[in-house]
Length: 272
Image (cartoon, rainbow, N blue to C red; front, side):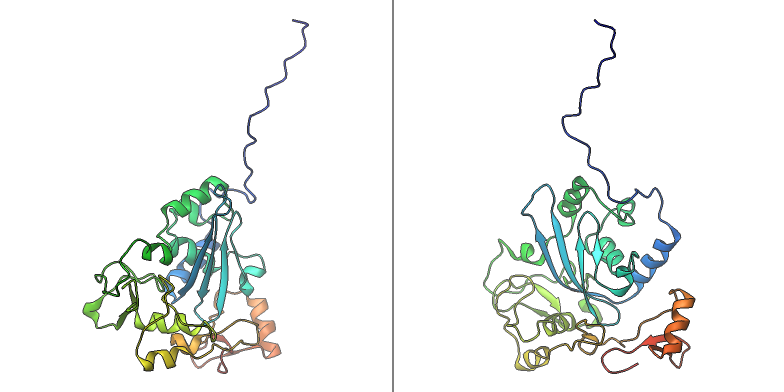
């Protein structure tokens, strides 16, 4: 021993660093956004998972927000959304909806701004299966599956006793979907062949449904495909939780206006 202090052994594998600070508790800003997310109508139009790197899976979700705009949410180490609110650096309601309702994250993860690889693996291992996964392994005879579980588009349970219209894949997998949800999902395909959201087989349906869903959602002035008409949404955006200074400036410029109920609105799909 020469009296020199021994160097600490280098860790065999460097601990992964979280790209945003870990939140011990949900901030009030998140609670407000989360509450809005779970009380407004949104629709999952598509889910795609990239497992090219098994240690770092990523999922991309197309979501029709409450105004009918179609946004892209990417659940990665730092979840992102291409909506205007998220582009300003905020945790938007679309991300909150996807994490809480679609992927069903445990509460301590749902309000985080960033994940590490092990959390992403756990999230996707425990998440509801992708529609394409749900169709794998089953019979492709077109026989209808039991009316149980939830619709893959609105992520709500089927309630046939309520009289809601429900369609199913007659061509192959037999999985059920709310009729209204299928119509708005198919309306976003913008002229492409209409397929089953589960098995991707060409959809077999009545002529009326096919003609209705063949409509192409227009691109609005913000550059987003907007399907408010197909979804039965008002196209109105509620600005009640936005910063008052920004709202005032937008109102002065004429970009937004008051409606009859005293709620700030933005024009979508040709109406205020």
